[in-house]
Amino acid sequence: MDSGGADYRRYRRIYFPDELAISGLVAEVDTHKEHQVKVLNLSEGGLFFTLAREEAGSFREKGSVLFIGLRGPDPFTFSQILNMEIKWVCDNEIMENIGFGCEFVDPPSGFVKQIRDLVAGFPMYTG
Image 1: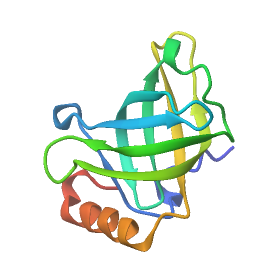
Image 2: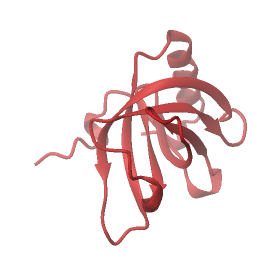
Image 3: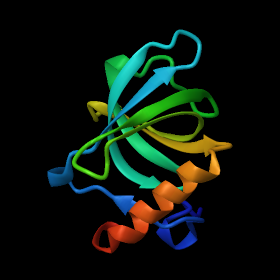
């Protein structure tokens, strides 16, 4: 079965190495409870983040989550509230964290351009 790897991705993305330390802020749609997450990659279409297992209780595949913003070195610090759909979940019981692949839902064109420009500006981390 094809896992939809990098060869089949719709958008180029930035893969953040550990030394870049990009965190994100997401919130539960119903309660607006905020969670700080580790962002592993970002594209104009969405992002992949990890969250400690004990904090991930309400996040489910095909569920919704609010994206609030990114925190990291410039230019990776910005705020933008967007809806995201959780497209897939990476959950292995031996891991401390659960990973969530999310797609931005109807992002504004200015945000899409901002992310596209970020990806274009960091070719050493893209795929």
